[in-house]
Image 1: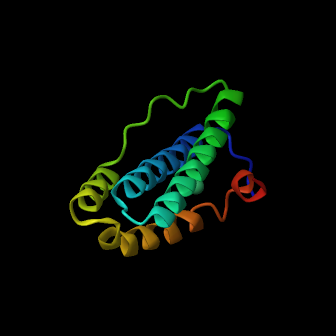
Image 2 (image 1 turned 30 degrees about the vertical axis):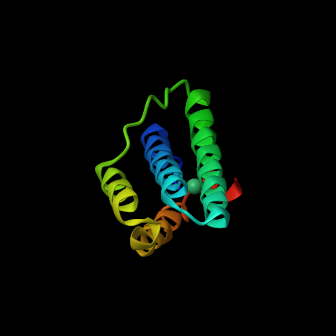
Image 3 (image 1 turned 90 degrees about the vertical axis):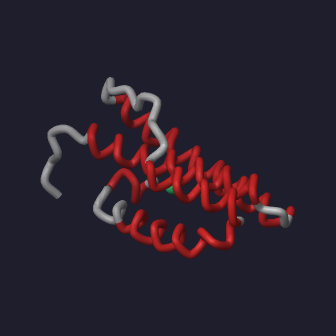
Length: 114
Ligand SMILES: [Fe+2]
């Protein structure tokens, strides 16, 4: 892999993805009625929050701020649908995003080793 002069933008994009996932899982936890599933969503949200912290840490090592990330339009739209119609409606959509999201990390050595 060619040395990258400045990975800050990449780290910020990663952070954004984790922030979005965390928010979405929090909303799914809120809108889910089944207590077991609620707990699953809570745990997934905690995992994504930990991932977000990982990228914030990477950024701060480079002297860069992660900043307060705005939740993306896509996530706000999905959150709206989950609240309105329940998690089952949005789960298939989230699934396909998660798959493309993890492919995004395939060429990122920090993400793979973490
Ligand atoms: Fe994640």
